View 1: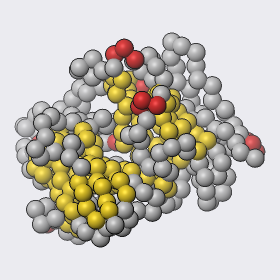
View 2: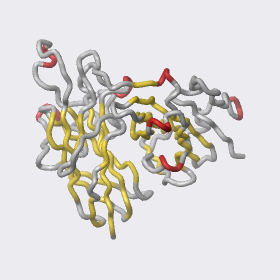
View 3: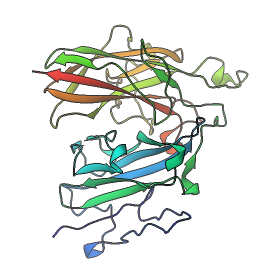
View 4: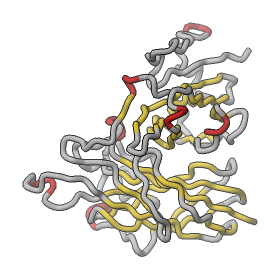
Length: 321
């Protein structure tokens, strides 16, 4: 028997408050289980999350989405009836590659001012038959986020792509205009520009020098089973302090190395700005979207749990046989 489970906006079993009618959430399912409580150690569910929403300077509104993957391994769900966003006009930017754990702000849906009051639903049909879904809405004032500087002046870094005007920041980020074309087994270079524009008190010994920023590349969308392998690019050598240091950062991206040097897809820009490049090789043909998260989680007023301060960049890659 298939069980339908509805996941609340940003927490397990909670309701989003709004001026309109509240969203009904099934409190417990069969056998007294909560919506995101796994039935067994395998076949656990993925729950979409609304992380919050932003009022943008241009009058638009952005809803930040993330997810919780209760499995120990990556799960892939193609965009379609099992992974969709409604209204359909906003469908297409959600991930198909779900890493374990709670991944915050991996994409955003931006609404024009005329549509700020609509609900944007992200629905996932899990392999075990359970359906999880979440509404994104700007009427829930408790989930409003902002672009203001944090206590030490930190703001999301700016990201951009070479030869393209404009910069992106925060979960909405920026999509590269150019599609990269390559073949299976042929490595290509993925690059993004990042820069810290935070205003800090330089009399504080922690900020006498501009803190480093970090860029981490990951598969966002692509054919099921299509693996991406990485090699460190010579323009971004491993900083000496990271060559063998253990990494216990709880806010580190899931691909970051533990107990040793970070993996090649994770690049530190020690001066707080620069270009983060990596060699990527694709194992299967198809259309991919690669996401790069540029973050400032090494400063005390920034972490994913505080919804600050990182920015997304997206690159489309077309891979042929």
